[in-house]
Amino acid sequence: MENNTAQKHLVGVSDMKVSANEGDIIVTHSLGSCIGVTIYDPKANVGGMLHYQLPSSDCRPERAAENPCMFADTGLPALFKSAYRLGAEKKRLVVKVAGGSNVMDKTGFFQIGRRNYISLKKILWKNGVLIAAEDIGGDSWRTMKLEIGTGRVLIKNGSGEFEL
Image (cartoon, rainbow, N blue to C red):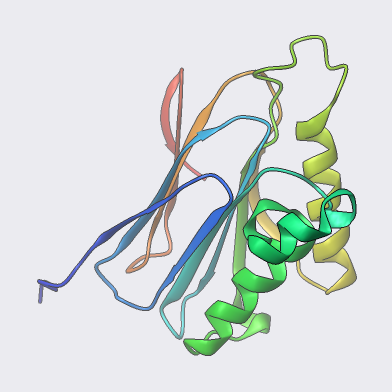
């Protein structure tokens, strides 16, 4: 039976969305050095996506207070807690990530993408959460899409589209 209230949720930079509506799709565009994180609980049929810019809020605590989704260390807890409120359970969550490229930093001098990814891995490891699939690094942009009804994550880049 088709859900007529299905929505497409757009996640901007430093933003997140969570849904328990089976027909919903959550999508983010222009993942460069930023990281896109999807979480999905197949039993509760709850999923969410975070698009964060920077690894740590230590340098800008006032910005983190205004928008926790800007940073890995404040955005990830916000994403997980939002999913828990909709019935997701940590032990069932499937985590997929994309981004962390050097689109704007071809020489790799700042390594923001790499630092974003390392921060993510540390936070997840510390909390006993594993990454099920990832598409990280390189030098191209990505679009990431999460289908709430299936948990499928699709990645689109300059070479085409594939399931993560």
